[in-house]
Image (cartoon, rainbow, N blue to C red; front, side):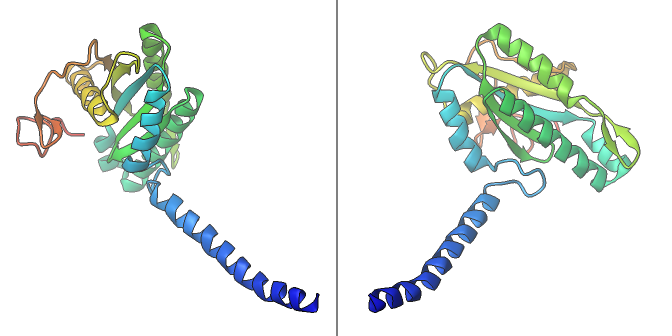
Length: 217
């Protein structure tokens, strides 16, 4: 009995050490899965969760690019710009939670989300709701800062559609580009056929593709 107790006592510090190591490892993994500024998921983590959402039923992919962000960043400074990005990330996270979705910061002032929709009418309603949420003023150092948002969306039904997250983001990017060009708050794709060619995995005309004149993100 005493030998068993001695062995147990010797094993406890080792077990505690492994438990602490495991906890720290999980925390490092979780940090690596998050954007350091907004706390939103990184692309890889988002892609896995988004694919599950798409496979689970009718959904939509939304690509969001903030309007007037550079102007605010230049006028009020990078700290104000960061505050706007954090506020946008929080609003998108809350919106996605309400719609059984997930959200990612793609980079700069560009975000994407995948969420459940029941129909095309539901998609239009969610786009209107999302636009209103993103356009609410953000209080930063006594200033009420307001940005607009250009949103592109594409509906997806796993019963009949076969595109993956990357391809759907590519289509949503086209609609966002059109919305920004025409001054519309949002546009949604009427079908899953791309309107532009692809260069280096991106829409032709995007900065860095060499395929034409791009729109700054």
